[in-house]
Length: 239
Image (cartoon, rainbow, N blue to C red):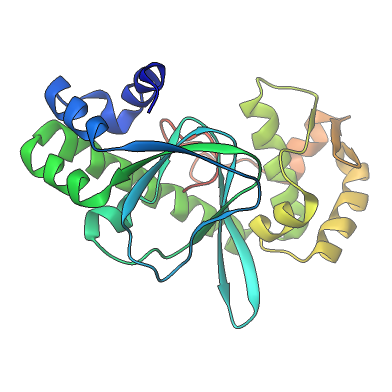
């Protein structure tokens, strides 16, 4: 691992409060690796051998069942993901693949658990990280179950705009088919929703999103703090 990569990892909430000795010991047994685009990092059902920390690139978390696949989340740097499986020494519930060239630090799960037993601050940070992840998933489930396809897309556009500082336009961060999967709708339903949103203040041309009427978009999305407000340190869909 590059020495200059350690400060970015240290600043993550998971590692911020641990002792210098624990952090140093954990980093000494970890290693960084570069991965090409569209490479499978691990598959659901495999035992969780490593905590992954994304330094550069983008990683998609996805699941499949009986030939169907769905996007569970997209991870962007600098972020740790799949901590719950590592803490429980269990199987991955999701698969992961790179969407672009990515650099990832791999922390052995055995050493991770050993460090948590020795460092109470680290254990508390891990508990907080898992609690945050749980709350993110509850918000996502409420969004899926309580909103229709148009409302989900409108809420997603509004959240993305807010995340970008209230931007009136932005480029889709993922392909439309992946966005549709994350929103729990078909590609056809996404296309219909995109067309219909022109009447509600959003124009999507290719990968370009333009908010033409923020008030109408907000009225359709109906932002709710118990669904849409991000958890602390929540940057993107959960990993």
